[in-house]
Structure formats: C-alpha cells, structure tokens
Length: 264
Image 1: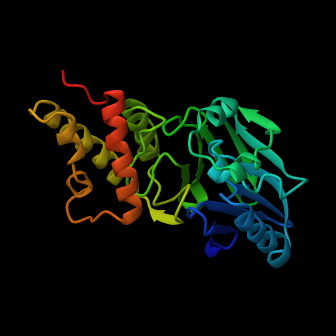
Image 2: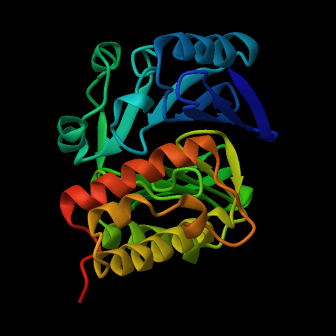
C-alpha cells in the first residue's frame, strides 16, 4: 500500500490491487474514510495503518459509488457507519466486472443521502454532493480548507469512462467539478492529482466526440472509430499512460456498441 500524507490530518492510501484509493481524514482519535480499496489484502493493510500506526477508530466510511473495486474494507471496520447515495443498490446490480471475492465485500450502507450532506469533521467542512457521471450513485466531496475534491471514478486518469454513463452525464459531472475550482483532487484510483485534471478530462471528452462524429461520416464507420488514438484526444503535449490506454479502448468499444456521439 502506498501512503501519501497530503495534509496533517489527511492521508491518501493506494492499494496494490487496481491502484484503488482510500482517503483517511483524521479528527482527534477517530478517522473518516472515503472508499475502501479493491481487495481484502489491501483492506487489511488499510486497517493496520489506520488502527495500528495512526491509532484511530474509523467512525464513518463514505462510498463515492457502490462498485466493488472500492468496497473491500466495508467489513473491516465493524463500528463504522457506511454512507452512500440512495441509488447504491442499482449501481451494484449494474456492475459487470466484479470478481467472486469482490462480491463478498458487499455490505449494506447505514446512511443514505439524496442531493447532498454537509458535515464537520475535525477542522474540515465536508460538502458531500450528488454528482452522477460515472454511475447514478456517484457522490463527490469538496473539502475547501484542503483545496481538495474527491471525485471517485468521475475521472479515470485524465479521461472519463463511458461504459456505465453517457457523454452528457459525464460532461455535466465534470462541469460541476470545474466550478468548484479546487487545486487538487483524488480519484478512485492512483492517488493525488492536480486540479487541472478536470480540464484534461473535459478536453478528452470533447475531442473524443469530435473524432467519433468525423469517423461516422467516413466510409469505414466502426473501423475508423476503433482507430482513434488516445493521444489524439488528450491535450497537446500530454502522453497517455498504459492505464489510460486500457480505458480509452474500452470507451471506443462502448461507443460502437451503444451508438454514442451520433451525427446530427
């Protein structure tokens, strides 16, 4: 597990399985977690760090969305109350890629929110707001004092992932994030990123749409869509990572399968 302390009372913890994140926010002798890793081995490391090294009791776990690659620690902290959006069950049913181990990590939430919730935790005010983009259960968290947004999988690398969403939903979610104007963000995977990542994802989505519509007008159709390169869709000077190439390829197949970015 990779440990990154970004504030005196905030840690970003990234597991080895799928680089899935959990964020720990400390308040005196207690901790609030956002998301809970993708594998039980990572969840156990998370528990040892928070309870053992930090000496904190986990009181709340906030789920940015109810996909299994973020739920592994839900049963690791018996006294914690789990907070999720009221659409959590629809999201879990819709998920397509979870493993048998991940199925067993499911735990019912204790508290459900609709549009949002504000809560004081230590020195921070957490603005928890509904932001459906990646899924219809996605909530994001704004922490103004830390200049920080926790965006879940509304951004994946510097992309958006369209398998469970639509371009319009994704764009609207990103625009909500951009209006927050924070300098740092934490996604569901791969640790801390700069706030400008929101603009990179918006650029990707807009550019991807333009390339797809152009491809649809060509004689090659779907084959032309398959040939759209990731680097064509990212801002100039930014090279796509291996992680981003995987999700870009999935996006192209989703676009073909579902007929996204129609012409006209």
